Length: 254
Image: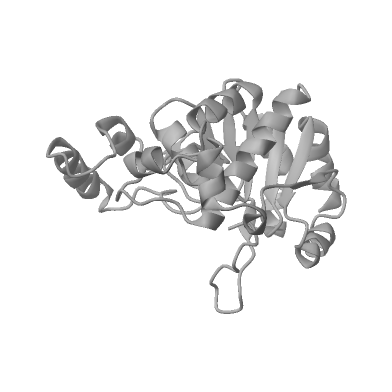
C-alpha cells in the first residue's frame, strides 16, 4: 500500500487528517494504517471547548438556517456543529495556504487494500472539472429497482410542500456511471475521506457561513443541487472504522 499512497502524495497539494487533541489513540491507529502517506493532523473544533450558545452568539452557527435546510426541520447536535465547523476550518486553511487541491481524512478512516492498489488508475480518470471526489462514502451508490419509484414519490412530496429536497436534488439523488472507477456523485453520506479543489472549497465555505449543514449533508446538498461538481470512487477506496458487529465506531469529532 505505501507505494500507492505515493501517488496521492504527488497528486494532492496537501493531505489533512481531521482530529481533536484528545484522540491520540486514533491518531496512532491512523499512522499505522496509512504508513507512506504524507499528511498533517488538523485539530478542529472540540465540542468540549465551546457551547452551542457561544457558537450562535458569535455568528459561527445558525440554528434557524439549520432547521430550514434539514430534511425534517431538525437542528444540529453539539458534536455535529463541531464536526461541520472543523471541516469548514480545513477549507479556510486550504485557501489561506493557496492549495489548489487537497485530500481530507477523518482520523477513523481505514484503507481497503484491494482498492488502494487502484489509486493510480483512479487518479488518471479524474476529469478536469472535478471539484469534489469522495474516496469514501455510503448510500445511493447504486440506483436499485425501487429508485425510480422512490424518486417519483419524492417529486410528489416536494410538489405538495412536504419535502424540502427540490426536483433537482431528487433527480440527482443516486450516483450515475462515468468511468471504470468513478461515478457522478449523488446524495451520499460521510466525510471521512474526500478531496476538494480550491473552487469547491470556496463554494462550500459560502454555503456553510454561518455553519448550517451537517458536514456530509453539506457535500450532498452542494453536489445534488449542481453547485459543486462531484464524483465518487466506485467502489469506495477508504472505509469507516467499524466495531466487530459492523457498526461504526463513535467519532471523537461528533
